Image 1 (cartoon, one colour):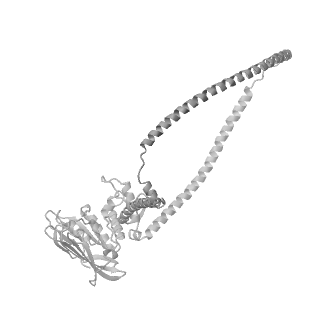
Image 2 (cartoon, rainbow, N blue to C red):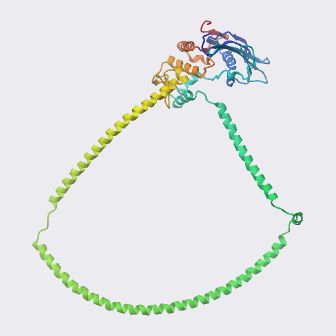
Image 3 (cartoon, one colour):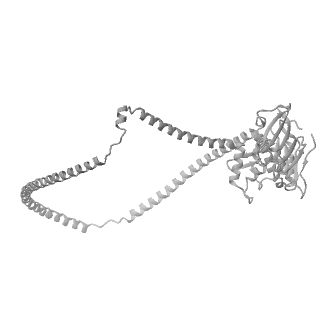
Length: 464
């Protein structure tokens, strides 16, 4: 095995797992193909091996029919911080532990009580599922899928446990608030009872309810008598009001007569004044007639001026000024255009600087160092400056980048699984194996064999 930090599978033994009676894989850290006809147990063998690292992909029905339990034993060896280390992971499935019970032993045979999670931060990452997200079922680019690829690269792991915890906390908060309201009402009722301060004599006195029916009948009679009294009282008051209103009307009429007499006197005086005004107007008309006659004589002696020449000069001046305004607007627009172009060039330069800074930051990250040349914006991934898709990049490049992403997400466990090897042609499979070997990873690929071909393992390299 190569001396890089991380663990590889040395040996795997599987017993009574699904349709597998017994299988042994002496991998010694090598990449290998799981080969067999459909139904031969290829997927079962890979699920059994990976159950030691991630039980999310394991269902509840794992014990081979007719047996009581299934068992998976995995030997891991490798290096951490340059020091050789090794572990054995055993997974047992039975009726009580349908998804498996895991025990981890160190190289000295001692139980690692904290379990496999304290050793590895294994991430379930399907290389080809990641690649397929970038296109639709018909092979066209998928914008939501490409954005999801970006999100995976940026976040590396979706924290499903955190989502589940948030759901539980939401229900807890709602229940807690309901209980608080109940307790608050309980305290109010307790305070009401405590503050009543009733004596025993009062409690006995008021313990029997009084029948209100006969009292209500008497109350009705009294109400009827009161209503009749008030009716007569209102009649007397209404008649008194009528008498008082009539007296007021007489007084108003007498006052109105006095005002009319005074108005007649004023109108007689106004008639005299109007006669004087008529005399004054007649005198003014004599003077105005004289002035009018003089004006007619002046008009007959003079010619009316012509405004055409001045109008033409004004029209020419306005046409000139309109063109002047257009030139001024053009000059201002030209100056603004130059200014905006300069600003645009500055912003373009700044955007490129920010883009370069983003690329630099990503390249310095752990995943960026492994997947050299990979960048992204908000909408999609790029590799060596070109869109990361099968229309732009060779298939070998797509597979190689996907493999290196998987490596970045699995720094401690140097194992990558391709569950559906039928997606690979010979060239693609060769590329995936070369990338795994180059970076010191162990590749496990499920491959469909010929019809009736039994389950077996083919190694892609010799023992190191």
